[in-house]
Image 1: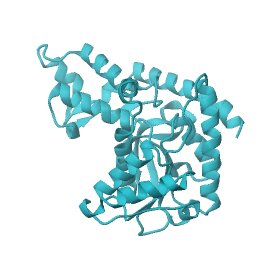
Image 2: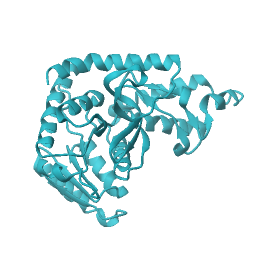
Image 3: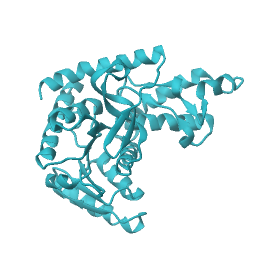
Image 4: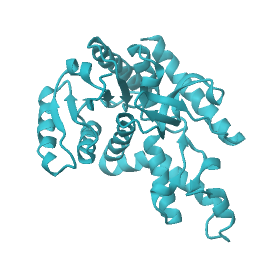
Length: 318
């Protein structure tokens, strides 16, 4: 990692990547952002377009197109590149294809002596974060997936509306796979310093536990509803990635629900999965091991089992 330099490379200038770059510039997170894509003209065009808005940004940011050699001087490389599902293609076939794409990208990054932090957003993010870690040879704390960061933001948004409070005062997490087996850790959900369970019990029927399940389903299925209406999701994940990078570059030691390597935490080993973790300048400095209730622990175990079943054959082919 290059000390005292806020320089970020983005691999992949599709909807997610450019939404991330746009959010980074609008929030003034880094001194330089380098856009890299197999389609060099696309990367150059996106860099030019975003750069033209810098006079209106909170701070001066250098935005340019580049190539893998630029990764050498970057503190963070964010990967959003990946293939879309083809007609008739199974999820596993797509996963195998994206795993090979991720392998090729990471090899090129590491061939240019990259020594920073890898942040992965390409789906299925937990599995591809594991692939990136295996291929890169970097320490496990320096390979991070976006995990359930966006899902957690969606949960906070929904709870904010339900309880009519600022979402920044909602503290709750979606854990597990970024996908169908994720779950809400309701036993650790707070509005300010009050447990959500206590608020419901003391509300005299104004709030109901049954509503929490409806809120969770809405959060879990949010991507499906967005894709049905507009074809893809990208603004939310772009801002979630920006939040992760901000925590890294500013050494915030923020607790975010990123895809992290478990080495015994929650009774799980050798898997990347979305859990609350402390994120700072050196990557993940600590996995927060919440005391989940029995039902939540079962849900996490199930989610991990599903991930391992898909991850094992992919890693064997690397």
